[in-house]
Length: 320
Image (cartoon, rainbow, N blue to C red; front, top):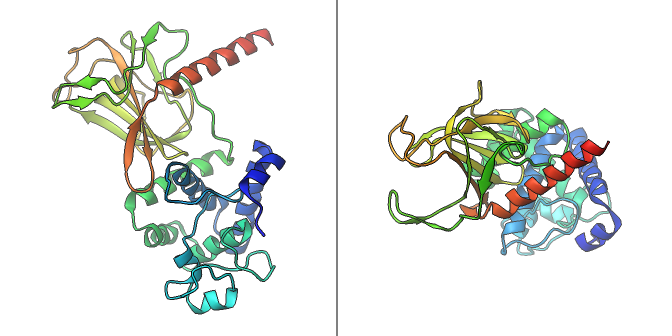
């Protein structure tokens, strides 16, 4: 019987959980010849979707991958909760016995990761083959892009420990901000303000707040010169009204907390190149993807937390 997540959380600390996940990814890599970071990316994507969706069950192990009963047991299998590997195979279900206990349990981490490994392997082990497999499974281009972005991040850093963050402006600079998320805006039609404005002087460096991948770089008539970064938690970090971009910054580039991506400006509210219609500031927004759509949420509490954490770490370094 699969151990519940509550039991796991009592027995394992965060590092143990990451180690257990990596062990499962490596097992799947060994049997499928598909690099571990593909499994890590799928798992991370699904874990974060489950955290923000009420229609999906909570995870029961260290993995977040959820295979719906009809896919696990087989689309024509009348027993949607079938755990017999033989009958599941007869109905072309994804479920398999991954740990040799004779049961194909959709709540068992070994069974789940080996089921995903076998599914991907049927398409081939090359990147383009896996991309097609992901499209056939999720039927959503955005989801495929999010997972493959995580693949690139995990491949770059070769670790699962990518939860650090940084405040978007250097702490030694002169800046000020308050909670402006949800405030009314009139430009371009009545709408709400989907972010926090951080006021600072022209040219103050703007930094990546997370490990992520540059999903967008360019001009928007409202946001001016702006950058969008997607992190491993399906969160989109939006930096707008920039004065310019960091040298050689490109879409598809992997970034990390504290990396300079541009500078504070006052661009926007007009055609490309428009600037100076408001005081220089960084508009910082956060958006969450749930597998269907994306919505804005208040970044202010996160900014305050990252600011406090960075100040504390700086003070600690000064003592050492």
